[in-house]
Length: 291
Ligand code: AMP
Image (cartoon, rainbow, N blue to C red; front, side, top):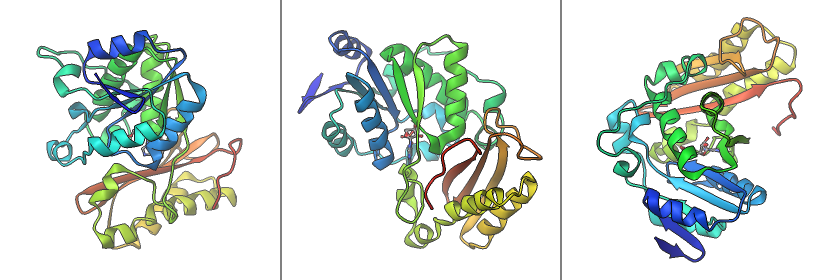
């Protein structure tokens, strides 16, 4: 157990248990894979506002990478991550080794049904099993009152909510808005892999979602036309490879024909070997976002 100016860094389950035993309640958990950016910072700040103790986990989870090379090249910089946690007044950072989470003989996976199957689940087989498994373990180890996740990974939030409900885990799942660069690109640890040309082209993701949102606001409720609007915006950018565009039921993630209920417009694209995702909620009852 080490102290970095008020932040206790723990690496084992036993150290975590010990640190939590003395921690005032309620506890807020922010699970991350490190390479922390302003999106993670916003989650920490929200957790700090709501809770007496803030725990951040930093764990690059091998089981949620369906492509091994993606895991190997995932960016890591623990010293910088710890500095951000410390500057945000995080009380406990849990930064375990892979064997601490998955000890020898580990043989159980949490597999969430319907909501985990389309979109990211279809594009990245096994991904959500890995996510649900590690988050179930973290929820159990930390026993937080609340856990904070980003809207940027909208389907992930739905998968985690389903998992927590089904496994009777008492941690409340809280979604925080997507943090963006000034040009609209959602912050992501993967943005570091973009070449300058790809980075310059990357705001096209946001433009595609805004095109769909604006068409929907103007009265277009035919989901296929909204998907077409996203597809056309994306394909006008030569560096982009489109993986999917979707207008789905915001709760079930099933594709819609008509946008007659709260919907999620989402997309996944590739710039070379770098895969990026983004989304926008289409919900008449939700507050509007700027731009
Ligand atoms: P990651 O480290 O990429 O696994 O992300 C950890 C958490 O941060 C997840 O709940 C993500 O949804 C969230 N997150 C990642 N990027 C952003 C962003 N740009 N805005 C808000 N939350 C984000």
